[in-house]
Image (cartoon, rainbow, N blue to C red; front, side, top):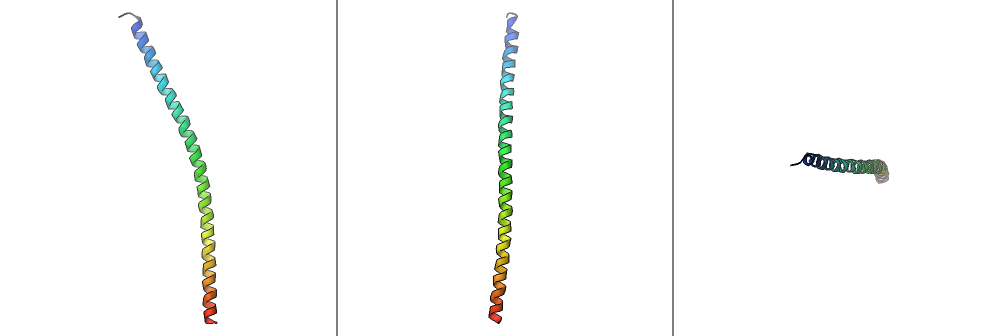
Length: 76
């Protein structure tokens, strides 16, 4: 073995580590982007849920009012 063999091995190891670090950085960027999109989607879904709850409450109130009117008509 000559003196350059360990240098090549170290260079190969550094190249390998650099590649792994770059893949990790790419993954972090991808996951960060996905997380941001999921947070946006969650916000929209929460808003839709709140709107549906309000509509449901309103429909329930209207239904109760109709039932009361029908009861009053039956007795009157």
